[in-house]
Length: 240
Image 1: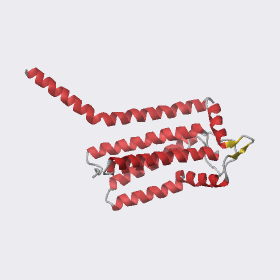
Image 2: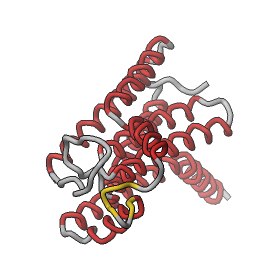
Image 3: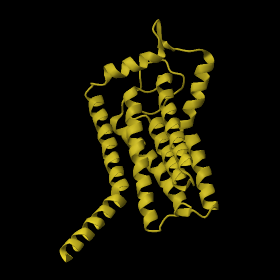
Image 4: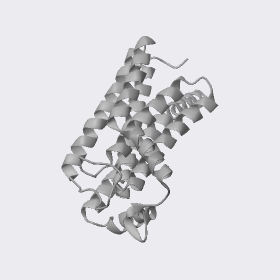
C-alpha cells in the first residue's frame, strides 16, 4: 500500500513537471527547428540550389514582357514602398524607442531592457550574417536604393524580431485570450507583409526573406522564452 502511494506521488510529480515545462520544451524545439531551417536555406543558397526557386518567385512580381517592370498600377507600387518602410531600421528604431519609453514610464524596466536587447541583438546578428555571406542583390531594376548585402533580408529579419517580440510581450500582458491572439496575429501579419514587399520591390531573393523570417522568429522566440523564465523567478514583471 505504501509503495503504491509513493509511486502515485512520483507519477503526479512527473506529470506536474511535464505540464509545467511543456511550453518551455516546445519553445526550445521550435527555436531549434527555425535555426535548422535557416542553416538549410543558407547551405542551399551557397551551393546555388535556390536559384531556380528564387527566380520563379521573383518573376511573379514582374511583367513577362519587361522584367524590369513590376506588375500592378502606380498606387500599388507606392503602397508597397510604404509597407516596406515598416521594416526599415529607422522606423523600427522609433517604434522600439516609443515602446521602451512607455515601459520605463510604467516602471517596467526589465521588460524595456528585454525589448532593447532583443532588437539590438537581432540587428547585430543580421549585420554580421550579411557581411559573412555577402550575397549580391538580384540583378533587377528596383524601386529603391540598397547599400548592404542580400542574405539574409534585414527587413524580414528585423521586422520578425521586433514585431514578434513586441507581440509576445503584449500577449503576456493581455487580460483576455482574444487580445492575446490579436497581438500575435498582428505581429505575424506585419512580419509577412514586410517580407513580401521586399520581393515585390525586387531587392531580395525569396531565400533571403525566408532565411530572415526563420532566424528572426527564432531570435524573437528565444528572447520571449528568456523573459518567461525570468518571470518565473520574479526578475521580470508578471502579467496582471
